[in-house]
Amino acid sequence: MAFNYGGATILQSPLFVELILPFLLVFTLVFAVLQKSKILGDGKRQLDAIVSLVVGLIFVSFAWAVGLVVQLIPFLAVALTVGLVFLLMWGMFYEPGTFKIHERVKMTVGIIAVIAVVIAVLVFSGGWNYIRDLFVGGNSAIATNVTLILIVIIAVGIVIGFGGKKSS
Image (cartoon, rainbow, N blue to C red; front, top):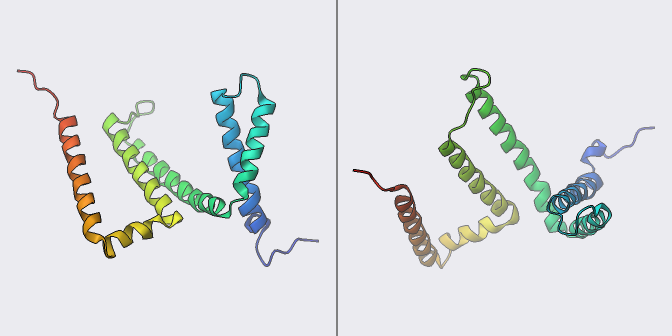
């Protein structure tokens, strides 16, 4: 006898997607961080497991947090796939064993990744609508001025940072 979930597989059931997988993800991540950092002591696997269990159980009790993680994971999978395709396409022009990524390219890709993650978190958490309302709503002049000031500060910081000393 096969299980019937309304035409969906067991991997698509809400129990699996919204409870089991998020719990396992958070439990594993917390356990790995505790093991690596040794915050609770060296060789304290049982204590690390109990703390990870508690954090994972508390996490799945908050629907908004689980929803945010469930929405971010597909973004992660797509971004990693795009990155892999980019590296494969770029790497095919190198001889085997000579593939190196320039430091500035690494920094640029890192900055783009951070911006993408911040935007994804803002979109999935509803913060993007709040920010958009600042620019479109009644206080748009304040938000526009603050943004302009931040852009000027960032531009000055970039110019100062890349304007190294010239030797004569």
